[in-house]
Each structure stands twice: as C-alpha cells, then as structure tokens.
Image 1 (spheres, rainbow, N blue to C red):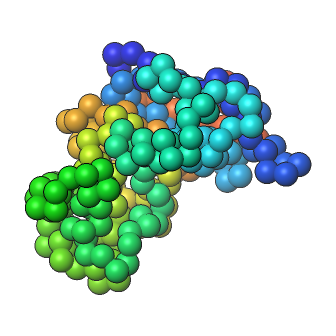
Image 2: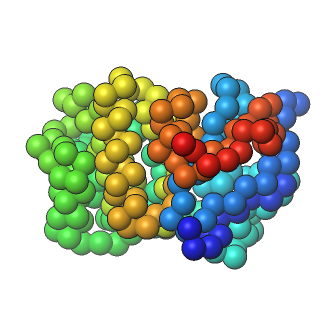
Length: 228
C-alpha cells in the first residue's frame, strides 16, 4: 500500500425510516485488498455501492483520487465504473445473449476500443482465468464457476484502479469459489489494483490484507485488523 486511493467519511444511508449505514469512515490504499464483513443486513453491500458511486450517500463524502464523487453526475460516475472502477457481483450479471468473449470485451467497446483489439484483450483475460475454451459460449451453456470467472475477467479487462467485489463467491461451491478468488487476487496483485471485497465467508476474507467488520450499520472497532 503506497497511499490513500479511495476514502469514505461519515457515510450515512437510510432506506425510508430504516438506517443502513450510521456514519462510516473507511480508507482503501493503493494496491490494498480490504474485506468488509459482518452478518446479513449489516450494511456491507450498501457501503460498497456507496463507495463505487452506484448509490449516493445521504450524508458524508466518498473521495477518489482527491475528487468527491458526490459532486459528480450519474453519467460521470457510470463512466468511472467503465474505466477506473471494476464491479463484480455475486451472480456475475453477464449478458445472456452475448458470448463470454463479447461480455468481457463490452467495457472496452463502451470505452471506445476497436472491436478487434477488444476481443483480443478479452481472450487474454479469459485465458488468465482458465476459461479460454468458453470464449464463444453464452452464459446459459456455462457452469456458475465459469460464469463468475468470465465476470471477473470483465471487471479487470480495463485495468481498473479499484475492483468492487460484492459476495463474488456467494453463489459458488467451495472449490469454484477458491478458484475464482485465487485467480482474481493473482490478477489484481499483478496489475496493482485495489479491491473492496464484501463477504460473509471467513475463507474469502482471508484473501484480504485487512478486514473491516460492520454491525448494525456501524464499524465494530474490535473487528478491524490485519487478516491472518
């Protein structure tokens, strides 16, 4: 970790009368993997979505590279998630009508890359995740583990500075989950990306450098520390 890259200060978020986050302070360093853990309903995913600019916090700020994302338009935040942020969800959310290679190439095409270059990059990332043979298959023809590897390749293909992974192994069996996490951690270490990882599984949190535990929308001070 060489310095602060992303930080949230005093983040609050409520859904109607129900508070989800109660003044969260969190910082993610360059190249750091941070696991956000805690019981179901404690606000883990809401915090990740606020940090990624998917949701706007009710109060507080999210600062990325010294810029307050709360001041950005939705279009600007969406563009950020196609370039410098990568997002990986529990169920991958691949486009079912597209092949694996087309899914992985999509962020590059949206960012203006040529079709040939985008496909070449997509094939390279599929190979890194061990699913090159799935390049011309559509998601319904793939297993859950294969789909999630493709989704991880899509999240990394643009060379993002920060990866947001929301329960990336939650829908997988233990072996598939380990394979996805091992491949993803190796890839982010090589390209120096930071990772914000939401999980309720201790073996997945163990891949992180540091763990932050949430309880009832607040950070549990006794649960913060180095993993391992």
